[in-house]
Image 1 (cartoon, rainbow, N blue to C red):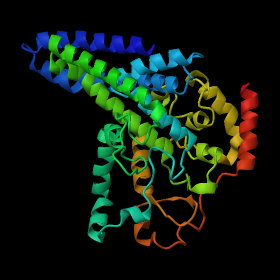
Image 2 (cartoon, rainbow, N blue to C red; image 1 turned 135 degrees about the vertical axis):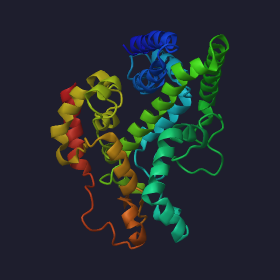
Image 3 (tube, rainbow, N blue to C red; image 1 turned 180 degrees about the horizontal axis):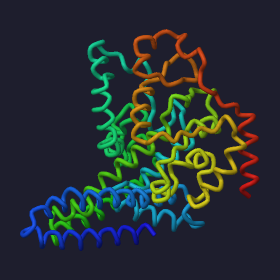
Image 4 (cartoon, one colour; image 1 turned 30 degrees about the horizontal axis):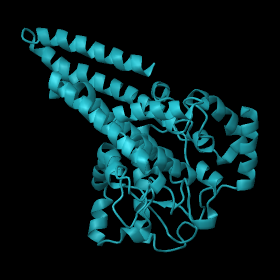
Length: 371
C-alpha cells in the first residue's frame, strides 16, 4: 500500500505541476498555485507516507515484518537505506533502547539532562528557557534532531569517545557487530549514488522537490513521534536497581495524531506502550493488542490525545531535566529550574511509579489473551 501511495502521489504532482506550468505564462496566478498549494500539499502527504515506509523498516528491525530474519533484515536494509538511515546501526541501538527504556545509564535516546548537567550562568539559562528560546530549541530538534542523533549521538548516552551510527568502532556497537555497520554504510553509499544519478538525469531541483523535501519532513515526523512517545511529565526515569524491564516499557505514552495519520503511520504513536511490552507484534495487530491491554493495566496505562504540536510545546516546557536525588527521577520544567536544587521538590505528589507485581500480572494476562 505504501509504495502505491508513493507512486500515486509522485504521478499526481507531476501531472498537476506540468499542467499548471504550461499555463502559468498566460495566467500568473497559476505560478502561485503551484508553489503555495500543489507542491506543499504533495510534500505534506508524501512525507507522511515516507514515514509509513520508515515504520515498515522499523518493523523489520524488530523482526515483526515476517517470520524470516533474513527477509526482515533484507527488506529493512533496502527501505531504511532509501531514507538514508543506516539500518543495522539503528537496529542495534534501537534494540538497546527497548532493552533499557528510561534507564539513565543504559537507554540510547532521549536521555534526560540532570540539573547538574545544566550548570550555567543565570542569564544564559533564562535566555535558553524563555518562550523564544524554547521555540528555537524545539524547532532545531524537530528539523535537525534526527541527523544530529545519527552523526553525533545527540540526546543519547555520553561516551568517552566520539560516538555515531556510521563508524564500526563506535562505542554503541560490539566488535562482532562491526561487519553489519559496514554493510549499512555500503547500502547508504548505494542510496547516495542513486540520488546522484537522479540528479544527473533530471535536475537537483526535481530531486529536491520529489524526494528531498518529503525526506526532511519525514524526519520531522520521526523526531516528533519518538519525542512525544517518551517525554511526558508523568513518566519516571530510573537508575540501578530501581529499573526493571516492565517499569521501563510502561514509562512511555500512547498518543493519537488523528485517525488518518495514525493509519498512514501504522499506529506507531497510539500503540506504543504495547509495542514496548511486546515488540514483535506486527503493527496490524497492535490496535487489537492495545485494546486487550488497557483494562489490564488500569491506572498504569498512559494516553494523551492533545494535539501533537501543542503536546510537543507542553512537553518541551515541562520536561527540561530530572532532579538527581534518588533512583527514581521525575521530569522538571522551566518553572522549576530555580528551585530544582531543593531535594524536597518532587517529593510532593509524585507521578505514578509502576508496581511490577500488578503490572507483571497484567502483562502476563494480556500475553495469554493474545495467544
